[in-house]
Length: 396
Ligand SMILES: *Cc1c(COP(=O)(O)O)cnc(C)c1O
Image (cartoon, rainbow, N blue to C red; front, side, top):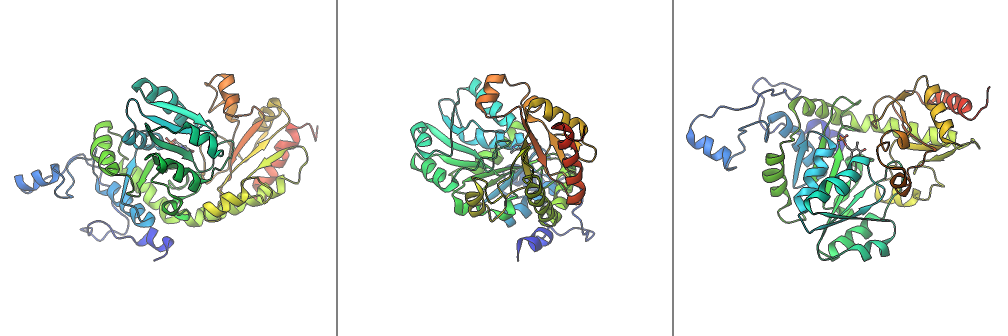
């Protein structure tokens, strides 16, 4: 079966008593057992009977099973948010005295998790340029537990060579952990790129129109003991399992993911091409043929480029004006909603990080991030062009 069919027809783990065509939402905390032996078997993981919904729930298990089938993975665990998934995956390999090698271009909370939260527990994070193999190599030590990367960095839109990073990580026995939120996992052959563990914020593409928070960890089975650490240690002890309601929404989202993504990506390219005709702004989108990461992105990520693009305006004031002038496009964070969203990352997502660090992270005050939605591209373009005209002082 092709992925679009699998996304819809992967069977439930157990036959539904009523033959329901949508996986029911099991809104319950605990499960009854027929006898003591069934109880023992469940609690000691000798059976897959659910015992308690913090660690196993039929609706969530169903979503995990579909993703496992689609990704051909060893194990998939669903968490309550992307950050919960990232925390658990990183903590499954890290320990006091271990080193994480990653980019200075990171999602804001991942940056703070690694450089602030985990630092308090003795984990050292080294920030390098992941597009420079020599610099990465120089940062690797026998204590390195992982190289952590984002497939397209947000908002710098940088793409590193994943195969090179995989070889470097494996040369010191470390894992390659990738946040693949920017391009749906359906299209990317992570295993052949040498990614050991994939994480995605399912809040984004999967949730189907920004309906619910979630995070997914996909384990390809190449790191010994990883899935045990993830499910039996971190999931149970940190307690951040996905809720059954979110799993229900995201199962529906997964069924329409390919259809939605195809339209959003076509919109993104169309809008990037149109806006790059303007000489008063700069447009960054890896789908543009003259983008420096175009070829690498296309070759690594199944010819997909995502639905996020950035605009560089003449000044921070112009950015603020642009944001205020928008009429159709929503002033909001988040990515891959059905609605087109715009944000000025420097003053918002990165607003509590000191100026110097922001500049070190290359978060420019002249940058606008757009997440292109499912509206008609002409309507989106009309709103963007009008707001840009106002922002740069045309039409006044
Ligand atoms: C949104 C996002 C996250 C965090 O996910 P949440 O679901 O908001 O916790 C992590 N990484 C990337 C690249 C994201 O876009």
